[in-house]
Image 1 (cartoon, rainbow, N blue to C red):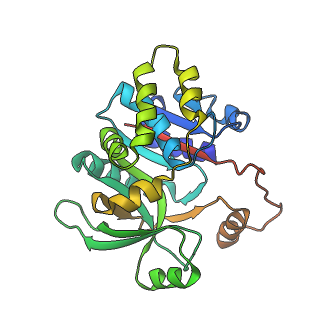
Image 2: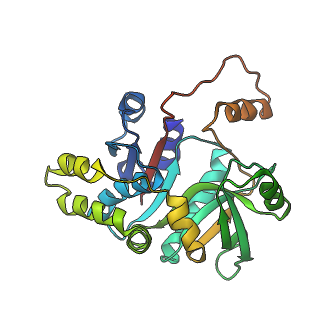
Length: 275
């Protein structure tokens, strides 16, 4: 799955501008997959949820090019077909580059009222210069109850894929506004980038860091600064649960010949890349 995410990232920006962040203790899972990529691979000292998982690699992008446009690709996704997805990626990059104070997020078209996914409630479809299928966001709903999910499904809401695009400096600014306690820690790392002291500083700033969720602290608080692009024609699934893998393969007409399991630690790889 990580290799597929790396392939998608390489198609979008080239291999030299990929930054991969992996969970604590997961280097043994990733070493073979990323060995052929010349980009940077960073292992978090401790897992502290999605906000630190994003702002750790973003720190290194900020050190190199704060004007970069960044895409964030979680690696536990099934996506097909790749060619159409890549066309959506190119479009989202262009939107993020032009509307540099916005986060551009992919919304998958749901086929059921799934309560285990986050949902995006679109507001107004943008037309002027944006093209079809680009919406302002009214509200985010993170893992609602079954009845609420059924309502969002009926109302035409979208699944939140957590695949997003933004200027690096825009994300950095939002962190300062919404989670200053996290950005302050990574500012220390930013000042040390390239000095050879990063490893010890990284251990220090993660030492007593509290878990912070990007969706609840950034996205939900900044819906008015977010656009959603509908992933029309793309089959998307979050493979964070073994049953979703089975569901996808059965939907694709493939028989199951093996049982799928997940490491007890709940390994997850997140990938951020700059362009």
